[in-house]
Amino acid sequence: MAIKLHWIGDFIRKDPGLKLLALVLAVLSFQAIRSTTSNEVTMNVTVEVRAEKGVAIMEQDPMTVDVTFLGSKEDIDGLDSKEMKAVVRPKASDPNQLMETVPITSGDIEGAARVRITKIRPAAVHLTFDREAVKLVDVAKPEISGEPLRGKVEIDYEPKAVVVHGSQRGLKDMSQMDTEPVDVEGRAQSFTKHVRVLPPTDTWVSQIEPPEVLVRVSIVSKVVERVWTNVPVLAISEPGSQSNLIFDPDAVNVTVRGRAEVLDGLTNGLVKVFVDCVGLDPAVTNECPLAAHLPPGLGITATMVPQTIDVSFREGTME
Image (cartoon, rainbow, N blue to C red; front, side):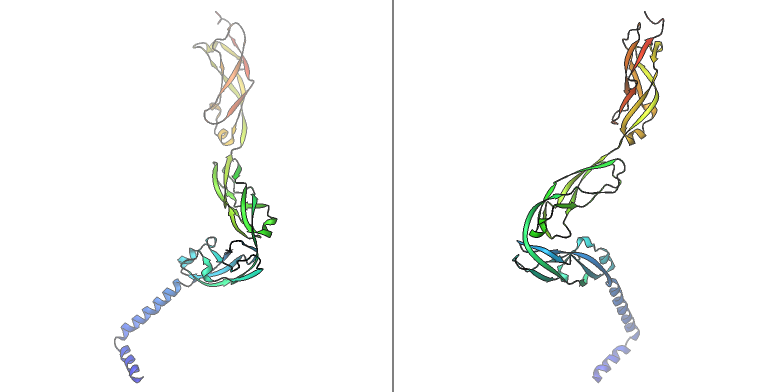
């Protein structure tokens, strides 16, 4: 032992400054590694039970567990509880078995790579078994979240029912399945989207077929009416004859119907009213229908009041 201590003393006395520097660097490196891997977070994770064929879960307690993770800040920040689950596999192969308690270990946590699991609470799930059954269940109309940029929302979806695999007693009273909501916030145009059918929170379900429904969302603009008053009547006539025409009345009111955002950009000068005076008898007063000229492609319609006017010719213009 004296020889060994003498060797250690000689080792320290040789280049003590260099050895002290090495020791300091080693301590700093240890602290740096420890600080980068000592970030901790606890997340609530769903417990998924994968039972043998023919075996269903009547009751499950708990439905979720709190899992504590340890790792670098980057790895901890990359965790998403929605992408993780605790998968347990009961040993029961006979639905007549009443119950089983299944431990939950770190190896059962899926979707949490590159981090260390230090704690799971509770550390077991208690299961009550039932026979597996299959039932056709209606799908509720998806709910809408948010507000469109304009207009109102109308939706349709397919399919209207899904096949649900689950507990025989649990499915007995099940009449409807909900879906994820459809977000229309800021939308201006119609669209389609697949949304997930949500399993019930109080009944164990092993499979939903299909797992999603296709939602067709129609953004329907509000249809409104605007009235333009005293719109002058213009003539479609033979060259040089317009100054000889007399209109009664010479201005009408025009009601334009269309989408609100279209009418907001429509100015008075874009709405014109014409009467066809070609070939009229200059010796009599002619009752002529009016026609509106509107910008094309806007999907708007117009109604004139009155819809006809009297057209006559000034004296001295008849042959």
